Image 1 (cartoon, rainbow, N blue to C red):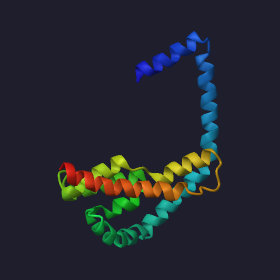
Image 2 (tube, rainbow, N blue to C red):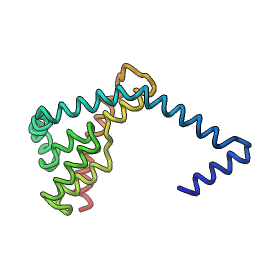
Image 3 (cartoon, one colour):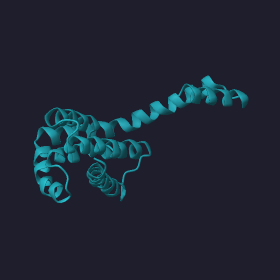
Length: 164
């Protein structure tokens, strides 16, 4: 990483760009983006909190158990399939609990680890990028991203089965 930063600074010096001024301008634009995206973050975190506190996560996890069974996913990771697209920290906290309960070398533990590494916090990512670009209608982005998450979940179990 330091080498990349050094290369960027050297390229800027060769092109006679004022590195400090360019940095300050980028920071100004970044702060503008933060201010414009902040209401979206507030709404997203509020809705995630309501979903978890109301028991919606438990109900959705229970409803997903038959699907998880049909896809040969361990039923212990059904809550992870709900949490991961919504909250990275919530998914990580659940993962920690899962690992302490079933063990890191179990099928559920390995599948959960691969799931965390191969899926995305979809709602967070969409809110950041679409909020920064001031996109109001997400059109197909959310369904396609959630299909990608489901694909990652199923592929995780298949690959863990194949390699372990």
